[in-house]
Image (tube, rainbow, N blue to C red; front, side, top):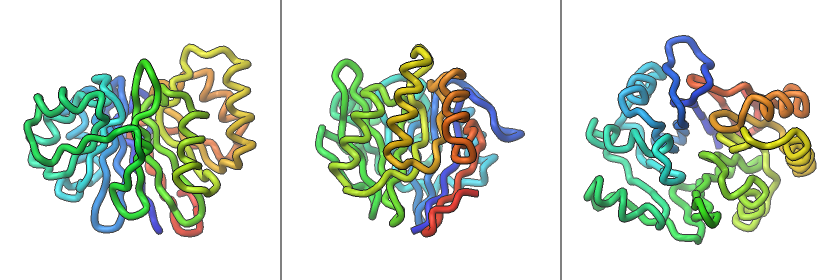
Length: 242
């Protein structure tokens, strides 16, 4: 399996010509289709970044909204109104809100149970208590790739659910990890946990925070991907990163 992932919306800047803003969105190319995971806070910025990345809206066959916060769902309406015909997956906790915004039969409600939305691509189902959130799993054939919006339920809880869905090693973690207010010892404890899980690559951005990114870079060395708007991550069957 080949997975091609591009960060399209992020408050961290990575590639020239991509606009930044508080929030997160990435595009995962898979076969002839693709998944837009979250839509950032600004639909117009997201659309310009999609164009900059050379992605056609017609190739987006699935849209996943991780949770209700506007920095992850704010661009959804503009993406749909721009002609995107994708199936849309949202957690049960925000389904009614999204349905009122977009009265569309293509909107699917995700409960606490996991669901396969494409061959080898799963949603964890809603996790967490105060802020419910959905994360995405990709089975590369050489380990799992986990994509998170903010990881509000906690990285460890997401990992435990991922391993219950697919009993395999976790190869890479991409997305926001919501560590910006955490202390150094808490971050180092999480870094140790992740390394013990055998993760090869980590690409934290958005709400992860500067301190956590610095500590993860020290902990993972060449396995740390400094992600931001425009970052391109390629994972092939042999699990190599470009």
